[in-house]
Image (tube, rainbow, N blue to C red; front, side, top):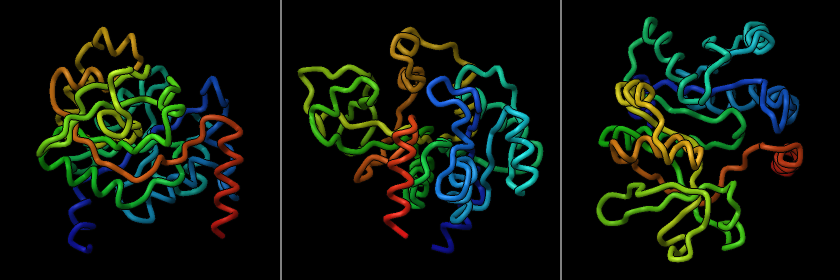
Length: 248
């Protein structure tokens, strides 16, 4: 394990954080336990890995980071996507340190486990990009268009063949398609190239950035047992806090 932690020195974990979410304004400061969400997620990653930074764009978040000694990178507030924000953060960090790999961890996923990040990092030795997938609970869940599907090609390599939102009748859940979880690993040079490519037609139709990638390279899939509970709504926040209380 110590050898692997040393290997992670060439990896930066970036957590994009912005306050202007339409569905849940000020979400990064919503409390998980006694901590704002952005701090809770930062601590979760920092427990295991040394190079963890928030990629931020709001002054109140910067003030909070300074006050609580959280490492951060300030980026332009006008970025359209999380990947673009990550891209700018990388350019800034490159001037300070050497690294080859990036993990893009969502700022609203408090229960990401060390092994998920380690598994993504391992895939990046052979692939330019990797992401997570888990089984759907049932067809009803798979029919929900907010739950992104990843179609997987089996065989020796487990790679993504397609991503979409609407369930296709000719695909079997948990055989052909799985629930995509939006935590990503990238080779640094690939991510810089990917950001410079224009959005693809399907990416714009489905509103899924990863569709720009599969036209250019393979995305490796790491299977995990169950969905990582994320916080999209105030109800989700209640669920997360209930789980934390139950674990104490």
